[in-house]
Length: 66
Image (cartoon, rainbow, N blue to C red; front, side, top):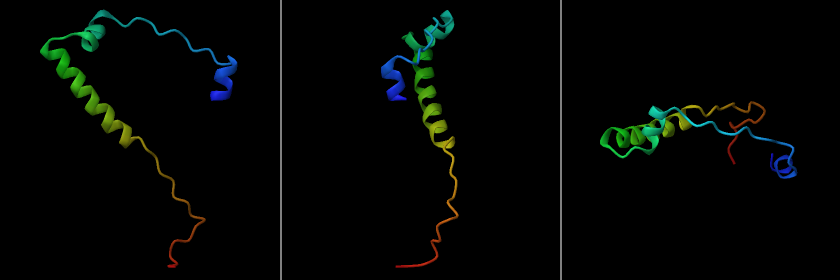
C-alpha cells in the first residue's frame, strides 16, 4: 500500500459533507450529542474485537511438549 500510495497510483475520493443532523452528533456540545459520542466509542471498541477472525493452522502439531 505504501509503495503505491507514495507514487500517486492511488487516488482517494473526497469526503462529502455529512447531513446537518449527523454533523451535530459529532460536533454538538449539548448532553445528548456528548452521550452519543461516548456510546459510539464503546460500539467501535466492541466491534473492533468481535470482527477479528481466527483460522487455526492445522499443519503444526502442538501435542508434543518440549
